[in-house]
View: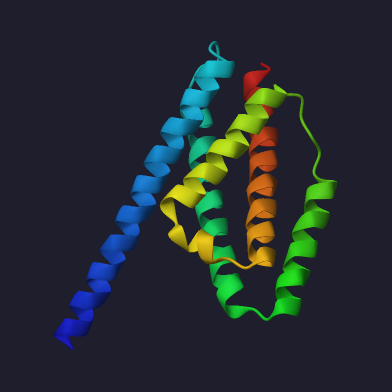
Length: 151
């Protein structure tokens, strides 16, 4: 029993270390990109919170897609993908620098691949689902920060 608890506790600590490292790198990358495109934006607690939530959303989406790709049957993965693609079509776009938006998405995807090697084992549908999730959460993030940048 003690060995099981030690194993569970050790696994929990590994997961927390992974999540903490990802969120730290994610935050640094996002703020570096911010400063490059919007040097006059004040990084306050509201913006920090929005970046933290964005990082958490990306991490949760990453874990969710990997789990779905492993456990869902093909038809269910296609349904998930179609749902995400429909959500993407309905999202409103905000006026921010296109280069900024592209770079944030690129950096986000790069960190997903860097931190989670399971991405390389995704099926074609799983990879498209991950891409759609990254785009969805990134676009939502842009909507959240738009008022802060244009104020």
